[in-house]
Image 1 (spheres, rainbow over the protein chains, first blue to last red):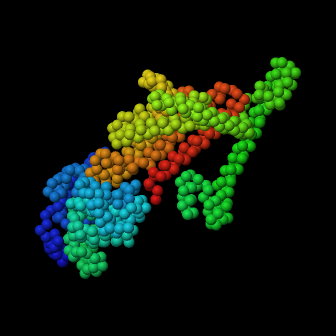
Image 2 (image 1 turned 90 degrees about the horizontal axis):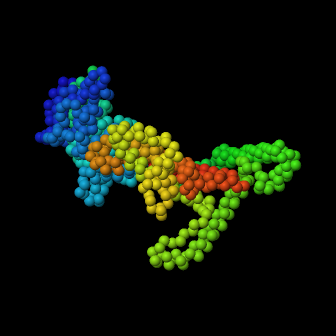
Image 3 (image 1 turned 30 degrees about the vertical axis):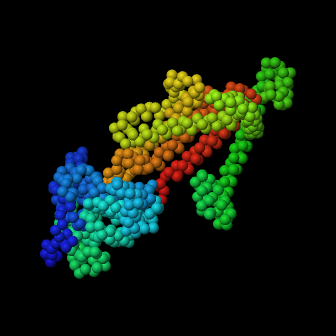
Length: 272
Length: 363
């Protein structure tokens, strides 16, 4: 275990010299209840570099989803600041695309239209053909090249989540926020979608924050795993740099001699 | 082909024919035959039973009233008058027929009378149109309005008028209820402050609405060329029937899936885009459920309102027949009853199909 921590000093090559994209400063979240305030998050500090993939793990109810929705601007911040690319956020916006746990596609639209609705907002001056090209590019990337015109409701859960991923990337966001994106899928589909996600991410190099409670998923996806303590007054308990080389290959990661050290470290944190 | 035609049938609300199609295409003929018997033949048998009960009921009532008439004649005018009355009733003379619930056969005869009447009247109309064609052409050149047929409307014309009135009323309901429903659905404050008004106005009787509309329209519309009674009944129908749509729209709009709202927030959609691209489509299923209720309420209310507003249509037909008291008036009223029921049923089926079409949540 000590050998593992000694290595943590090293810098991940693809992040060398990159500026900070997301800074959470003194974040606090309080829910008022009849019995007094319930403090979910307290004094939470987080800093993520441009192009970094961070996953956040923690027990259910520790406030990791709360943190993510606050970064997205969908949840009010009780104290502190969320700073994206140098300026504090004001509400939600397409610069922070979200992939929700449930695909939340608009069921009356086709796959293409679901992506298009976002692209239209972000690229209002592009021609219709250009917009369509963007949509089709990302749908193709997530493996839906033949299903552009299928209604969202006629797609399986996994397919719908693929559209959700395409929709998020097509916004060309500064930060991609993933709220347990594969939580509702069976393990086979989950694996496939992790590959799809990493594949597109590798090309786009977008800063990404993924919430998960799956230890293997957090290692496979991230450059750095952030471990949150259990609430109330949750904060960041520990973090672990995952230096496996990119682009990643599931087999190579699983066969890496140190994989189980990393896994053990995370499991150890969660079990205490 | 088979699945497609079954799908179409189900869409049209004729799903009960499904086993018949399956049976003839050779799919489990025994099982489908028994399903067909259960689903289709039993209902038909129940119709027969209904006719039998109706017929015997009508006969019993007829006999009761006939006996009463004879007894009355005996008590008031003596034995001779009683025998005369009995013979008169037996002979089928119109002057002394018991006036009670008509039997199925009488209703069918009344139906045929109404149908022949319609053919006669439309014949007259055609002839009138031919006669006045030249004059009307001349009048049109001079910019005058054409001479119109002003004779008595046939039963089918009355149905047409009623359908026109309900269409106008429902359209009015849509144009009032959906926008208001969206506005109050979007704002908690507005919804709470409007709620008392909706809850109080919703159960108000059609008759009162009619009187209220009458008060206002009478003052507002002074142009004698406008069909005031049509306007009054259409507006009253709309006002009576719009509440289901209004409430369903506001509920639908206020309970849009939080995920969709989050999508809208992340994409920073403008208010207009948010309403037309997210909120409205998401509440379509509830809105169309409300519309279906609106249409069926509108049809029920329409008959009563026409009856009171003296505007032409099925309602006034029923009322006139009741006032008329002719030999076959009762039978004609029953014909109207069935026509009203069947049209109401068809309207509901149409709305059900539209509703199914607009509901996207089916897996």
